[in-house]
Length: 90
Image 1 (cartoon, one colour):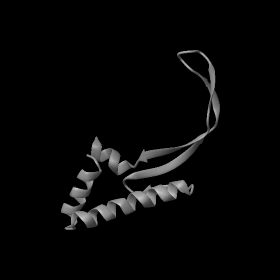
Image 2 (cartoon, helix red, strand yellow):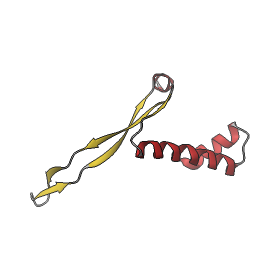
Image 3 (cartoon, helix red, strand yellow):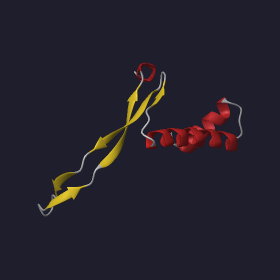
Image 4 (cartoon, helix red, strand yellow):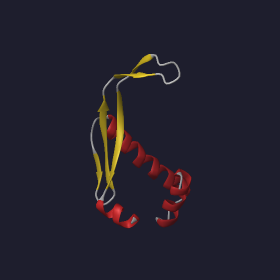
């Protein structure tokens, strides 16, 4: 399922137009992104938790040349599925 499929499903299930469903889906994605960017954790009971983790700068090796390279620090997004989602999938 891609974003377009999700918008169609939301429109169908909630009796909305595709434009309204698109606005709703985009609003949810933007809200989650904004909260994570601000350093907050987003918990959707029964679905899961979105959070961030900091990855420090480190050195690595270029596999082709063997040269040492610097890998920049990075913020990663994590998702932990909730109990109800896990049970629904299994």
